Image (cartoon, rainbow, N blue to C red):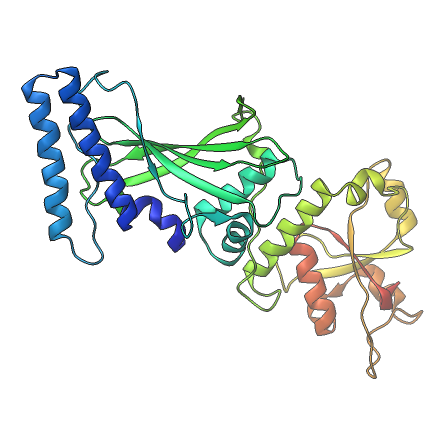
Amino acid sequence: MLCSKCEEHFTFARPDIVENCKRNKQNAIDYAVAQGFDESHLTTLRRDLARYQQQLDAQTQHVFPRPWSTDRNFGDLFPVSECVAVWEHIPYHRTWKDLRLSASRSDCQLCMTLVAMIQYSTKGGEMESTQQITSDWLTEGGSGFPFRLRFHINQDNAPAIMLHFHVSIDSSDHIGKSSLAVTPFLTVVLLGVFFDLDTVIDEIPRATRIPRGTSTEDQTCIEFLSQTLSNCLSTHASCAPSRVNSAWVPKRLLDVGLGLPNSGSIVLVEGDDLRASAGEHQVRYLTLSHLWGSCRPATLSKANYGDMKKGVKFAEFPRCFRDAINVTRSLGVRYLWIDALW
């Protein structure tokens, strides 16, 4: 799924892009004449420009012709590739703020990939929200085949960034929108140096989307929590596990297990026992501290301590506690601290 701004890279429908493609085709003809190409090549180039113009004249409102030719038998006759600008000048360029908003509020895979790659290439450094991001296609001379999609970020006080995407084309499709597919070139250019990301692509964080739901029962909310928690622990120096006193464990925790939601039994465990069994490993747990209000929640007492140690069925807990247990399990954490049950 693509947002409307990213679709501009694949529909080739914007008037300025159409004119750019036509100009490139005419440039190829002029180059071929100047270089003395044989008549067959000139005929092919002229026929392609005529084909493109005819399809433009006949196109409907929602279908635009592809701007490239299926005839690619030019070999190395065209040493210079042509560019087709997409996000270039006002009002077509995008800012870093625009890109992040689109990545968080839509399902646009290209926006999310770009945000993740930019965050990786800047190593978490801050970028001005108004920083412009431009893009263009590199196309083959003569055929006009797009072979690389590039995104550029030229910062005043930081290294320039260039992101490349490989292009695959289904030549049996005659409409530009659905005949192109891009995958990350896995290359970030900083100060003219190419960094191959093949070995570290897994380190690129997934872009975080704002959840569509309004409750932790919605899977998009859980995905949002999981992504933001992972980002916090991996990129925030003050939140890193190494900064936490791993030897300390609360007096008591609930072992919620890692089973399915709304099921199983919950067991009260002593912190000393956990610390002894964990050894040097850190005990991960979440906490629930909430406003009790006028209704006193279930609390730990001498009367129910034995039952809690044996295990209490999930359904017997109050709704607030059940929600916290489900979230804890969904985030892959086994233990939960609740202020009323310690």
